[in-house]
Image 1 (cartoon, helix red, strand yellow):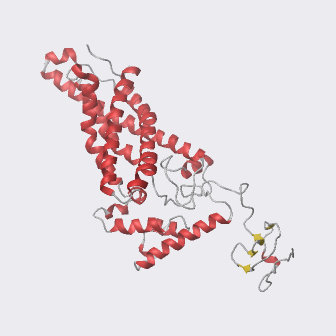
Image 2 (spheres, rainbow, N blue to C red):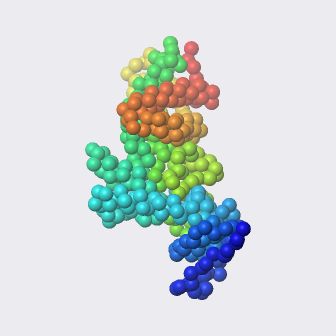
Image 3 (cartoon, rainbow, N blue to C red):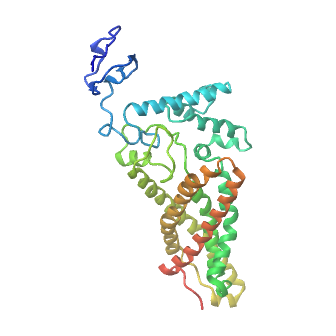
Length: 374
C-alpha cells in the first residue's frame, strides 16, 4: 500500500509566527485520498485522513485547561471542538438577526457581548426577539428577569403559580396538620403563611435556570469568588451548546443558593413573626380570655430555624423541581404545548408547595420552635 506525505503550502507562512507554546501533533499515517488546507488562527493544516496540526494555543484534550469562563459556566468542549461550538453559536445567532434585519447594536450590551463570544446560540436570540414583542417585554430591561426569561419563557407563569396558590395550599396544609388545634394555633398559622408568602417569590427566583450573560470577573478576584461566579444558578440545569458545568460547579450552585435562601428565610421569618407578635399584643389588650391561651412566637429561634429549613429542604426541592422535573422531563415532551405544560407545572408546583408546608410544621415542632397545644 503506497504511503505519501501531505503537502504543506508555504505561501505567506513564516516559522516566526509560531509561538514558543506551539506544538506538533501527528495522526497515524495512512493512504491520502484528498488534500485540504485550512488557514485559521489555530494554523491547522490537514491532509485527510493524515493531519499535521500546528496549534498556537497550547494542547487540547483531557489535559487542557477547562473550567469557568467568567460568564457563569465552564467550557466543556476540548480543544478545537470548543471553538467550533462557539463559532457555530455565533453564526446561528447572526443568521437569526439577519433574518429580521437587526444588528448587534440594537441589542442589550450584555446580550450582544455574549453573541460575539459565541456563548449564545440562535435559539436564545430568537426567544429574545419573541419576548420583546410580548406584553412583558419591558422586563427584559432588568438583568435578572432577562436571564431567566431567556432560559424559560414560562418563568413568569411559574412565579404566578407559586405565589397564587401559596396562600391556599399552605393554609390547607396547616389545617391538615393541626386539625382541631387550628383555631388555637392561629397565631402560628398566621406566622407560617406570612413568612411563606414572602419567601415564595425567592424560591422561584433563585433556583430558576438562567442563560448566563455575566461579563468576565476581574483578574484580581479571589479563587472562591471566581468559583462561585462560574457556578450555574440551578445545579441541574441544561447547559447551552459550547458550555458545560463540572460536578463541583453544580454542587457549588446548591451551596450558594442555600446561603441565599437562609438569608431570605430568616428575613421572611423576622417579618412574619414580628407581625404576628404585634397582632397578639393588640388582641391581648382587648380580649382578656385570649391572653390566657396566647403566647408570643419566639422571633430569633423561629427565624434561624426557618432559614435552615429554606437552605436545606426548600433549596433541594426547588432545584430538583426547576432543573430536573420541569426543564429536563416536562419541557422536552410538552415544548410545543405551552398550555398543557403550564397546567402540569401548576399541578407539580402546587403539590410541592403543599408538601413543603407539611414538612415545615413537623420540622418546627421537632426543633422546638412550635409546640402542639392540647
